Every structure is written in structure tokens, then in C-alpha cells.
Image 1: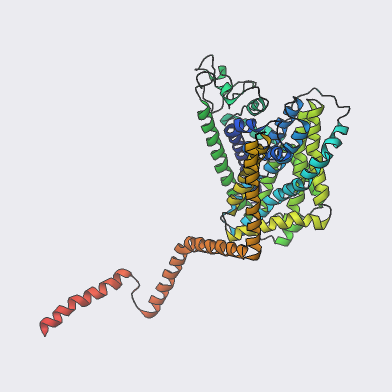
Image 2 (image 1 turned 120 degrees about the horizontal axis):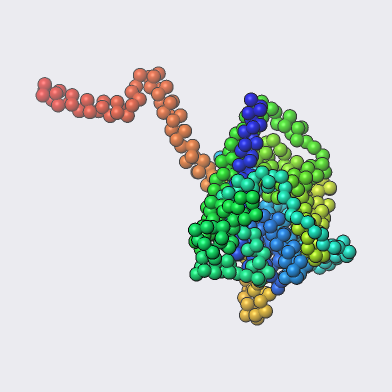
Length: 523
């Protein structure tokens, strides 16, 4: 039985990773052009941070964002200082994937609370680290000067890109479905091309022979021409337009999402069966390892899979089912933050000193964040308690994770990015507009804080969410409640001898009516 459970876990884990692969590839096809267009050098620190967040949310990969930033800095398209702020944003944006994964536990309130807390502890660490280090970097250039000293005698190395073992296992099947043209975002970001450049033939791909897809140049998607037997993926269409390729990206994203939730459901069920009978105390003891060892384990796993999103997304269901405590999840995610910097460092080895400086800034940013928030128990409890509070919010409203993602990873970055562009455009009218918007937003935030703290706004909001959740639960539980009531009515019927069927009850008055005329006739 244990062997079958282990086999089932590995089977569904493989397709879970395939789902992540398809989700990431679909996001890159959908948002590759938009993400590439975001990058530029004429921006302030806040804009650089927001670009990093939005680009990573669009591409669903901090490794991809980091490699783009490293290449842009290496090509002198983006300055090192701007690249550092973009890397900070990439650190925040990468945690959206495991937050999506946590929503797979919406069917169980206890699991959702634990899983959402386990997913957002990564967010809280990243937000807190950026909140401290962004102003420090803007004021002192701490990371810039530290990394500049480290790359003083750097020389680029010759070599090939390293591919982790997990990618080697998952990529062959994923590439049969969709292959992303990774040059799109980099070339658009560097100004070498636009999205229309990849569709030069009246909005379609350029092909020597449309009957042979391998003769086509790449658009948002491409073929694997370097394989022993060259092939094109299932979604590749030689007559595709940009909109058709984007639609294929949407399909890949949806397929990946469905696959993720199916495999997540199966993994949770298998894990629950395997852990049946094991007490919580035994499980916690089995996973109770030293925090610093956990950081090393998290870093090692992430180096192997080359993605912190994969590491945290696989760990999130374990927190949801109660196999991993939140206190153990935190150091593992911190290790994942360290491990994901290795991808950028390996890419920077093939470039120049500027690219290596940004890659090292990513590493030192995470190390500094860990040094601030992890060693001292009081500081460590800040991200842990914040994540627990977010987890408890799902008790008030199960749709809270959707609201959180929409605000933290979409609305707020876009608002701040828009305001930053108003101030950096150089137009006095736009600057005045930006100033008005900032004042209005500031007043709105102050009023909201005052309303929540002194006018009972927080309690009213909580009461509203609790009432809504109770109403939804009542509607969902109504069929079961009706069955229970029917069973009780049958028990009472058997005890009293009264009919239970509505039809039987309806026949009785009818019989009485037919007997009434007979009595009148007799009279």
C-alpha cells in the first residue's frame, strides 16, 4: 500500500510539474511582448520595482525576469542601479504562483487557511525585505557598491547553459505541446524589435514553405530545430497571427491550471491516506529540522529545479494537509529565494561585469533579507504572524485569495507604475496630475485607516464577510440539511403512524371531499 501511495505521489507530482511548465509557457506567450515593453532605463526606483513585479507576474518566472534584466544590463540597455530595483520586484512577483496553488484547497476551510498562510509567508518576507532595503538602496547604493567591489576583476566564461534534472524530465513532454520563443521579451526590451517584427507577412509568420512548419521563423512560439529529429509543438501554426499565438498561450495557461488543480487534488487525497493514523505531533517531529538546514535544503532543491516557484508550489500543499508547519515553510522558502539566484549567476558568467553585478545584487539582497528577518525570533515572527493573519482571512471569506492576488500583484503595481511614469515623463501637466493623484490616494489611505480604527470599519467589514460566508455555507449545505430533515420526518412518521409522502397527504383531503357529497345525499 505504501509503495502504491509513493508511486501515485510521484505520478501526480510529475504532471503537477508539467502543469506548472504549461502555465509558465502559456503566460510567457500571452505576456512576452507586454513584459518586454515594460523594461527601460528612464525610470525611478519605484517604477523599476513595479516593472519587476508586473513582468514576473506576466512571465510567471522570476528566473526569466532575472535573466532578461541581466542581459539588458550586460548590453548597457538598462543601468546596473535600475536593474537592482527590477530584481527586487522580480523577488515579489515570483510568489504569485504558489498563492494560486493555495486556492486549490478552497474545498476545505482548514486546508485553505494553512495553505494560504504557507504561500503568503513567502510574500510577506519579500514585501518586508523590499520595504527595508529599497529605501536603503535608493539612499546609499548599498547593494550597488558591494557588488561593484565583488566584480572588480570579473572575466566572462565560455560554456553552455546548465539545465536542471527536473527540467530534463518535464520539458520533453511540455515541448511537444508548446515551445516559447524566449528571445521575444529580451529583444523587445532591448529595442531591437517589436511584436509585429515576428509576423512580417501581412501579420503572419514568415515561412519558406507553409506546408512544412520547420521552415517558418519563430513568432511568439517556435519549433525545436536543434533536436535529433526536429519537430514543432502541437500549438504551433505556420499560418498563425499574433492573436492566434496569444490564444494558444491562453489555452496552454488554462490547460496548465486545470492540470495543476487535478494533480493537487489527487496529491492531497493520497497524502491524507498515507498519513491516516499518524498524529500531528509525529508528523511535526518528522519535519522538524534545524531552520538553517532547511534553508540549505530549500536552496538545494531550487538549484535542481531552477525555479523557486516550483519549490514553493510543491511545498504549499504539504502545509495545507498539515504535513509541514508554517515555521518550517519559512526557512524552506528563504532557501528557495537563495537557490533561484543561481540561475541568474550562471547566465551572468557568460556575460560581462555589469550583468554579473546585477546577478550578485539579487543574491546579496536575499542574504541581507534573511539576516534581517530570520535569526532573531522576534523579527522572524513578523512575517509568520502576517501570513497567519492572511490565512485566517480565508475563514471570513474563501474568495479572499483572489482579492489578495488582484490587489497585491496586479492593481497596486499597475497604479504605482502609472504614477511613476507620470512623474518621470518630464511633462509638467502630467507631473501636476500625478501630484493630485498621490494626494488623493494619500487622503484615501488616511481616511480608510481612521475609519477602520476609530469608526468600527474593521469590525463592520469583518461582520459583512462573516455574514456572506455563513450565507454561502448555508446555501451549499442546504441539500444535505434537506436530506437530514427528510430522514428525521421519516423517523417521526414511523413512530406516529402518520403518512410521510406529500402525495399521501394530498390524497387525504381529496378523499374527504369525495365523501362529503355522499353524506349530503344520504341526508
